[in-house]
Structure formats: structure tokens, C-alpha cells
Length: 565
Image 1 (cartoon, helix red, strand yellow):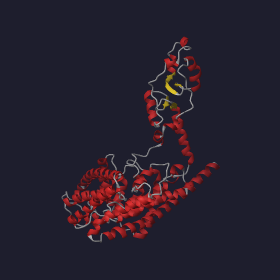
Image 2 (cartoon, rainbow, N blue to C red):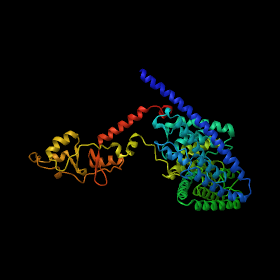
Image 3 (cartoon, one colour):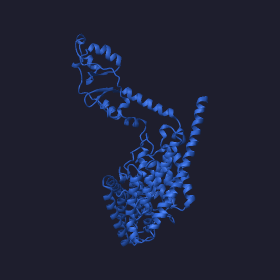
Image 4 (cartoon, helix red, strand yellow):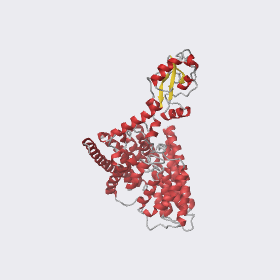
């Protein structure tokens, strides 16, 4: 092997090992952080709240929303309670790392919201704190990473957060890679995500044990009735998830546009009324907290269909109110609870209902549709129940729910799919391919002059006509050939100019320019400002060269995700 190439390969291998070690460190620190968060918000907050008198439970969510608002006001700049959404949004911003300044404020707001009974999930803050830990470590050791791999430890940390809070290491890695996209995955981050997820899981279970999140006994039935029921669950879960996504989007908009005092008061009154309704109907505060108590309630006896349907409405209203009130938390567990209720509701309509099977596959379908993460949802069901036999019916329900969901999602920051090199070039601003120092001609230039000076020197088949900085139009080589040779010395460019030819705006993207050039059948497109000032040109040659230059630049950076996955 060439000595230089051997040195480069050895360097890549060394950097890959170091990246994986940092992924493990990210996972371990995230596991500790999530364990601490669970102790504060869960054990010291929510668990104790369930033992307090009913009036305290009724008032607690209002106190939590108020404390969350104060924490966001004093400890963050943007007052934004987003947690897992911040991970998804920042994933698609390769030029900027995750902002670490709001982390303290958002985590305090999450403890206040969830510890006081807000109807959101613990996984949102867990993902967020893991992503923040990974971002901080990568900033500290940035020399080990390629410029194109600025998010690798952020993904590893997010995977560790999911893995720890749910005790589901495979789900953590898959969810962190799947959730940024509706129809794709961040495939190149697989190995760092797995390493971070596993180490986060090991640290967390060393503290809290390995008992499954939703322990299920026995073996689920597996026949035609169950498979048909799974498809029915998929239909209802997909429709339900679409409605849930719409409601949460509305609630997020409301929380960002209304005055804090108005939205907190409205959300507090709603949550208090829901607790009262739950106590009157069920004798328990089933609208408080993330909803694990709801799943336990479903599994402890035969429930009437109307009780399940009403509770689904109450729980959805509680989550919507918590989001609208500015509460900080995740939507993963609310989707899980919604799916369990939908599945149990379907189970009551069968001649021989399975109280175990249908709630579980409902979880897979509702969660997979809501976050557009079908693989993670099915794996979550297998890991969180300790019963991998639920995978096949869960997969059927999840696939059907994906079809029913359409293009909706509970997170507006998801991209449709991961774009490749050419697609990414199309999204670039046109300024990256615009020539500003170009050869032009005035409108009084003769055809002879255009032929001998302009076209020969520019080597283009199209030349822009510009007078005193103002764009007039274009002339093509074919236009000049139509002029009688004896008249070329006296025929001005103004007689041949095309002033209706397409022109590009400097605000265009490369894709818009490519489309305009293709539709007009031209190899050159003038770039003109709104006041008619000529800025430059873009050509097909420039676009091809742009792709080659940027691709070569990325290739020379080396290292990073391509080396460790």
C-alpha cells in the first residue's frame, strides 16, 4: 500500500475508535442525567403527587405550568419549552450545533411540568439532555470529527436518552435515527447511536433495574382474528394519530401566540376539570402524569367500551392543554397511551377479546404513525413488554396506521427524507453558482463585433446585453446567423435582443435556475435584481462545476460518520 494512503487509513481507524469511545461516554453521561431527572420529576414529584389529597392533585398542574413559565422566562432567551422537537429541528441544521444555553431552563421547566402531573412524557427531556450532552462533548473534541459530521454525538446522546428512560436500547438507537425524517432514516449514524444507546441503558438499569416498562405475561394468540383485528387497530390508530397531530400543532401555535397569563390560566382550569372528571368517572386521577397509570388501569380488568373511549378523549385533552399551557415534556408516551386505549377499544368489539394483545399493538400503531417511526414503534413494543411475539401483529397495525397518517406528523420539524448530494445542491442559493465578472455587450454593438469579440471570447451560445448596468435582454448565436453577412457591420444588437427571455432573481435557489434553463432550452441564465440591475450569469457549466467542487471538498475532509458506521 502507498505509504501516504496507509497513513490516511490508519488515521481514519484511530479517529473511528475515538468517536465510538466518545459515543460511549455520551451514553454513560446521558444515562446518569436521565436517572437524576427521573428521580426528581418521577419519584420525588409525580409518584408523591398520586398519594396526596384530591384537591392538591387538582391544583398541582397549574402550579407546575406556572413554575415552568417562570423557569423559561428567567433561564432561557426564547421562552420556548421544546425538548425533543429541538433535537429534530437542529438535526436538519448542519451549520449550527444545538444551542446549549436554554438547556438548564428547559430541564427545570420539564421537572416542574412532569413532576406536577402535566400530561406529557419523560422521554422529551431525556432526548434533549442527551442531545445536549453529545453536542457539548463534540464541541470539546471537534478535531476528531469531519465538518459534515457535526451531529454524530448529538444523535448518540438522543439515542441514549430514549434507551435509558424506557429501558429499550434497540428502540433508542432506531428512534434517534428515524425520528428526524418522515420517510427515511439517518443511516450513517447507526454505530455511534447504538453505542450511545447501549451505554445509556446499562448505566440507567444499573441504578433502577432491568424490569420491562410494561411487563406482559403469557403468549398472545396468533390467528386470522388477531391479524384482522391488527389491521383494524392500524386504521383507527392512523386516524387517531392524525387528529392528535393536528391538536398538538394547534396547541403549540397557541402557546407561542397567546399571552402567558391567558394560556396558563386556561390550561390550568382545563387540567383541573379533567382531574375532577376522571375522579368522578373512574375513581382515579387518570389524566395526571405521562399516563403509565392508564396502561396499568387497562390491564387490570375488563373495561367497557365507553369508559375507554371517554378516557381517550380526556387524555388527549389533558395533553393538548399541557402543551397549550407551555408545559415542557415529550409526546412519545402520550402517543403510547393513546394507542393502548385505541387497541383496548378494538379488543372490546371482538368475540374473544385479548386484553393483552390489542392494547400492545395499538401502542405500536399509534406511536409509529404519530412520530412516523414504524420500525422504532414495533421494536419498542417488543422491548418494553419483554414479549417479542407481539412484533408481527404490531408490524401489521403499524404499517396500516402509516398509510392512514398520510404526510402528517406530531413534529413539524421532520423532513420528508434525507436528501442526497444532488438534491442538497439544488437547495443551495443561486449566489453559490453565479458569475459576477462576465463578458456582456451594449445594445449598440454591431453583429460583427458580437461575433468577433463577445461570442468568441465568452465561448457561450448566449450573451447578455447590458447598458450602463441595466439588463436589456439576451442574444443567442443563432440570432446572429439570421442576419445577412453584408448587413452585420451595421445591424445593432438592439434589433435582435430578446427582452422576454427568462431571467433569474438573486433570491432563487439552484433548483429554480435549473428548471428555468431547462424550460427555456438555454445554457445561460442572466441574474437580475428587482430594479433591473444586472448582477451576473449562471450557466450549466457553473452548476456542474459547483457539484464537483463541493463533492470533492466533502470527500477530502475524511473521517466522521462514514468511518464508524
